[in-house]
Image 1 (tube, rainbow, N blue to C red):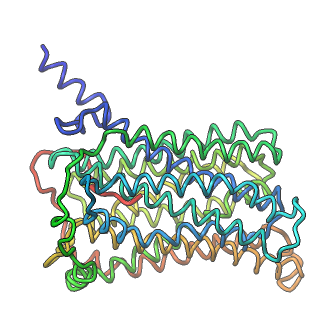
Image 2 (image 1 turned 180 degrees about the vertical axis):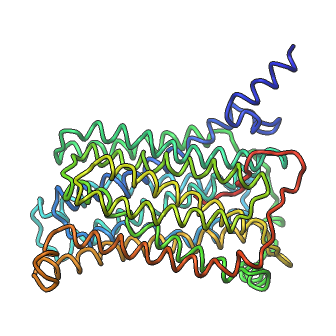
Amino acid sequence: MKARLKTVSLRALPFADAASDGLPMAQLLRLSLFQVSVGMASVMLLGTLNRVMIVELSVPAMIVAIMIALPVLIAPFRALLGFRSDTYRSALGWKRVPYIWFGSLWQFGGLAIMPFALLVLGGDVYYTVPFAGQVLAALAFLMTGLGMHMTQTAGLALAADRASDETRPRVVALLYVMFLVGMGVSSIIIGTILTNYSDLLLIRVVQGAAVVGVVLNLLALWKQEKVRPMSRAEREEPRPLFRDAWADFARGGQAGRLLACVFVGTLAFNMQDVLLEPYGGEILGLSVSSTTLLTALWAAGALAGFALAGRQLNRGSDPYRLAGMGILAGVVAFSVVIFAAPLNSAELFFSGVVLIGFGGGLFAVSTLMAAMSMPATGVAGRGLALGAWGAAQATAAGSAIALGGTLRDWIGSIAMSGTLGEGLATPTTGYSFVYHAEIGLLFLTLVVLGPLVRTSGTYQPKTVERTRLGLADFPA
């Protein structure tokens, strides 16, 4: 009877088989709180604050896009941060704890000063120092972004260290799902609190998120990494060189084309990140609380793409063909968002946001699986391949955010001046141009992906037993 009940629980409960003797379920769920913290900070940066800056504080979208892109552009250093935490040596033997702790402090500091920096940037506070608002806002976003990436990279590595070989893929998959859940739940809570917007309420919400983030990270970190004292001689031993591992990775497989595909595809899916909430507020007349819910809808779509990829990959589907399905879903999604404006349909707009999350999630997971299965030589391993994947994705995401806001301002100003004709002299034109550009980039991604589909065979699971999708070391 006990064995039967255990079998039922493993089938009924999500990730119930992720626990192991080295990482019990209670400690695993507590460790996953750092993903909730990072997801909450992501909602603040990419969701609530960009809408508030553009609509309520009347900050130009180009400046907002650049500010939001700053922390994302730090993400290419995640591979180096992970490599450094792998080889870090201290008297206590800790490798991950210092990176998680200082990452939490950077995240807290950035969010603590951010609301005041935004009020200065928006002109609500009088000042005489030139560019004070831009400098303070940039500093706040950089501090928050650095803390997020440092915390998440070291946290995922710590989870992978503590998990067994059998449960490690499911552990890190659980952490990725917790990241999306953190984004969805925090977006609902923040949106509800900001229903009656005011500057004072914004300060309370952002600084409250800073405190909650530190508390969650402390709970996640407490007694998770064992103390392993190291002698002075062990600490002074030479460390492996990052450039040697990177050179080995660059010589193997079709890494260049895969990274190019990831870069262009991510660029196509992320140019809208800074525009969807302002688009809903300015064009469709949605409230701050309504547009903040867009992050939850996007997260739901991403989870659906995640589930589909897991099911199909475990059945032996080709990851490159699944990535193509995600691209086609993105084409449909941006077409739906474009038609939401002339039809004045909020429901159509929300449906398009869900499809964007679905297509982007399916594309990301499929290309990640391709990177995981790519052969490596010498000192280069799976961790470096995933780091390169994350670097390409993050660089494209940051560039896309800045490019999307700039194109919206530039094309919008040309259209409103009447240069493009009376029919296009509307605020919708700037947004629509960016969405059409993303559709074009998605077709370009299909062109880059084509040779990979032709030369790759059908993906075969390593084991006969069908297991859940293993996203080991997933760089969210």
